[in-house]
Image 1 (cartoon, rainbow, N blue to C red):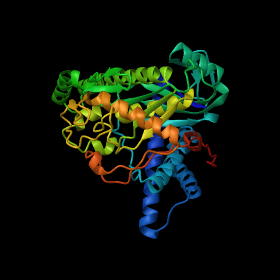
Image 2 (cartoon, helix red, strand yellow; image 1 turned 180 degrees about the vertical axis):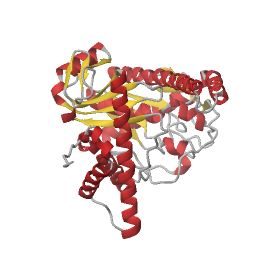
Image 3 (cartoon, rainbow, N blue to C red; image 1 turned 45 degrees about the vertical axis):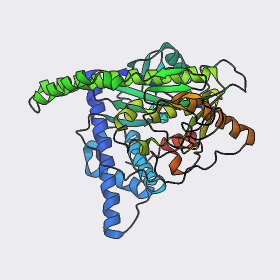
Image 4 (tube, rainbow, N blue to C red; image 1 turned 30 degrees about the vertical axis):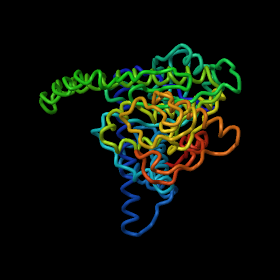
Amino acid sequence: MLKAIKIRLYLNEEQETYVAKLLGSCRFIYNQLLTFKIKEYNENKKSVSFGELGRKLVDLKNEFIWLKETHSKVQQQSMINLDYAYKNFFKNSSGFPNFKSKHDYKESCRFPSDALSDINGNMISLIKQLKNIHFKCSIKDEKYLNKHKNNIKSATLTRTKDKKYCLSILIDGEMSKTLPSVSRDKIIGIDLGIKDFIITSDNTKYENIKVRRNNENKLIKLHRQLSKKQKGSKNKEKQRIKLAKAYKKLYNIKENYLHHIVNKLLSENQTIVMEDLSVKNMIKNHKLAKSLQELSLYRFKEILKYKAEWYGRDIILINKYFPSSKLCSCCSSKNTELKLSDREWKCTSCNTIHDRDYNAAINIVNEGKRILNIGLSSPEYTLEDYPLMDDKEPKIPLKSNDRKRQEKNVISLNFME
C-alpha cells in the first residue's frame, strides 16, 4: 500500500542556497523541454519522444554548464513530469502543460528512491549536498518512516509560499492504524449541503465551520496592508509571507476538520453512500459558487475515497441526477415544485413534514441499499431532476489505479552527462 507522509524540513543557509539552485535548474529544464516540444510540433509537425527529450537534456547540460552544479537524477524527474503532463493532456484532457515561472512562490522538485540516502530518528539525508537535515512530524509518522525507510519510492521537496520547506515521502508499507471492526450491514447515507456541511441518514449533523468567511475581515486587512507596501521592498516581502501564513493556517484548520469527519464516518460504518456530485458544474451557479468552494466538497470526497480503500470500507456513489431532495422518504412520491430555498416541505401524498437535508440523506441510503441488493448501478435520471447540473451523460465513476500512476511517475532514468 502506498502512503505519503509530509514532514517539515529545517535547512541551514548553505542547504537553502543549494535547494534554490536545484529548484531553479528543474524549472529551467522543464521550460526548455516544453519549448522544444512545442517548436518541433509547430515547425515539423512532429511529436517529440521521451528518448529525444533525454538527448535534449544532455545537450542542455553541455550548453549551460551551471546545470551540472545540481543533482542530475532530480533534474530528470522534471523531464518525466513534462512527459506525464503531455500524456495527461491527450488522454484525460487535463489542460496543456504551462510554463513554470520564477515568480511563483511555491516550487517543488522530486527525488527518486536512489537519490535518498537514509533516515535516522528525526534526521534525514537526501543527496550529498543535503545530508543530516533535521525534520519534524508526528511521533507516529516518525516511527513509520524509520521502520519502512527501505521501501521509499520517491520524495517531493516543496518550498511553500511562506518560505518553509516540506518533504512529502511516498512509502510502500503496511497500515500503521486499523479501525474497529463493524458489522457488514452497517450502512449510512450522507447528504452534502451548505447550511450544514454533512447530514447523515441517522440525523447526525456536521456543521459548516466557514473558515474563510469567518476570517474574511482579517484577510482583507492583510491584503490592504500588502498593497500599500512599496514594490520590491523587504517590507512587502515580509507582508506577503505574513499573508501566506494566514492562508496556510486556515487551510490547515479546514483540512483537519475534513479528516476528523472522514475518520468518524469510517470508524462507525462499513458502507457509506453519497451522491456523485459534479462540483465543477455546481459552481456555475454564481449565487452558490463562493459557498461551494469554501466547503471543499471535492477534497472531502478525495479523502473519503482513499481512506476507505486503506481501511477496507466501501463507498457507493449514486447517480448525480438522483432526486434525493425531491422524493418523500416515506411514500416515494416526488415533489417537482421543490425549490432550493425550501428547507422543509410537506408531502402532498402522505402529509409527512420533511427536513430537506435529512430526507435527502434517508433517500440516499435507501438508494444505496437498493444498489447493494440488486447488484446494479444507479438508474439514469434526467436533468429535470437536478437542474443545477449540466446535460452530460451521467456516469458511475470507477476507482482509478493510483498505485500504478504513482509508481510510473517516480521512474528514474540515467542519461550520460
